[in-house]
Amino acid sequence: MRLLAQGPGWTVHDVICTAGPQDRPYEEQHSRTSIAIVAAGSFQYRSHSRSGSQRELMTPGSLLLGNAGQIFECGHEHAEGDRCLSFQYAPDYFERIAADSGVGGSLRRFRVLRVPPLRALSCVIARACTSVIGSIQPPWEELGIQLAARAVHLAGGLSPKAGGAQPVAERRVTRTVREIELRPDAGLTLEEMAREAGLSPYHFLRIFQVLTGVTPHQYVLRARLRKAAIRLAAPGGDRRASILDIAFDSGFGDVSNFNHAFRAEFGVSPRRYRKLHG
Image (cartoon, rainbow, N blue to C red):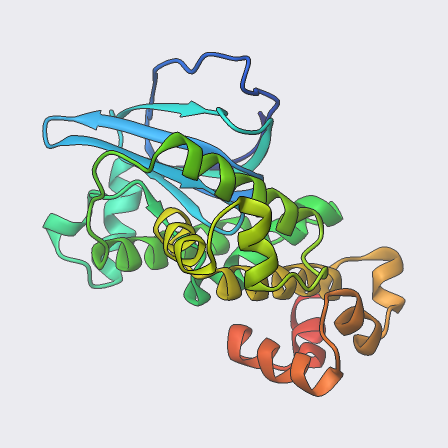
């Protein structure tokens, strides 16, 4: 755990975990309201409360949610390691953000453990991940406020999910997610991913969406666009890479398709994004 930034009522840590299937999970407790961006890897996140047990598969681009005082476990049953950007908020600081963003009192405590990789989160997640990979200092407090406001609104529209999928299904989807993370530009089709997972396309599509919160197509597209956004804003050699090169390297067959998808995801063109965040 490495402290990236802090201020009155908030902190940001870069958390790298090397645990794997050989390591037993153990109980931990959120000392503050917690929102963690999963930047790499995957893991199981569990919590037990009076209302029941929940379990979620955490994948890159998703948000881990936790309330102050909440008991939880993180496990790596099917693959090793992950990296998260963990934003911690003092209760009164978080309450003020939630209230100012128009969220009612009953929704200011998270009822769910995760927000999946949704378009509404893409920009703030890409900016945060760029800062770690590119070793630049973004406006952390600004990002933290944006992240908290969006998380509390998105989480309010989700329903708690009890239990979890069968371990075999979870292992198969985890393997696919890890493969996409390594090679988002590989161009795997739904049929190829299903065959690799040992499932029919129908069952793979259904299980993948249940476990990750998005369809395989949405997941792959978001992974490609996140990779492109990080490169567009990164300092150093990538600053000299053309938008055409980044589009092809990210798995897009032509720049017009890339421009259209990028604008739909981030609200601006790739060129404008580079000027704003580079």
